Length: 284
Image (cartoon, rainbow, N blue to C red; front, side):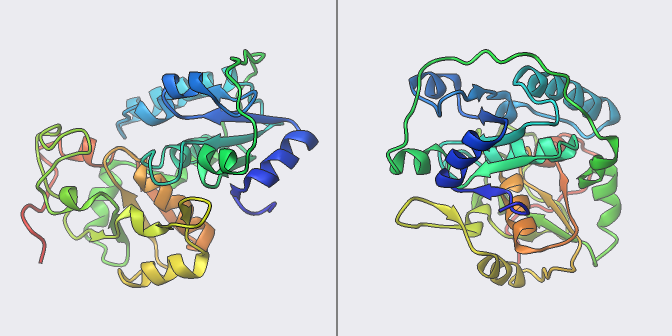
């Protein structure tokens, strides 16, 4: 498992007992308070935070989450394990945590495969005690940021058909009947980035007897083949705010796609800038 990000409940239990581990619960505070994996800390902002891809927006994101992860007890020595309720119900929020930690250059990151639902399905314990960890200095590796692209880079890529622009939003957003998961008119414009291909994030997952999981690498690559993505294809991902795209990012990386980057500002940013082109209406 050393080279893999996804971790099973059994592997997590072993990890907790064998090395310094920080568990990060990305769910809303009410769900966390009702019961969480023992010693987990709650950082719901991992899911809710809206970022822009401007230099100022990226600086704010780095500062906010370096502080949040440091307050959670991450110094670079601990393994960060991020989880949500289940892989298909939290809009990819645990994977968004993974992506943000990766963007900041954190060296040791895992995602609980199947979320807390997988943990409880095995009869493992929950706690309502709130852990107050010792504050640590979170290390930022400036060289790790190349997995994040900005609006200018996405715009420039429209002239390069060799880079696949992959829209992983829900179907109503892709066809332009809704602007976001938060309501059809949440953003000022509906549509998609010109030339984007559509691979809905749900297609990265499948039901199992123990809950929804990401598909096996060969199954993910079969899905990718339907939109012309191979392990060698450069891919720029987007969704609404980088959560569902983070789910797909992790799936593609685990399946062996070598060059995957995220337009984290996604449709929430792109649609609000009238100078940026969009495609509207039903795609053909």
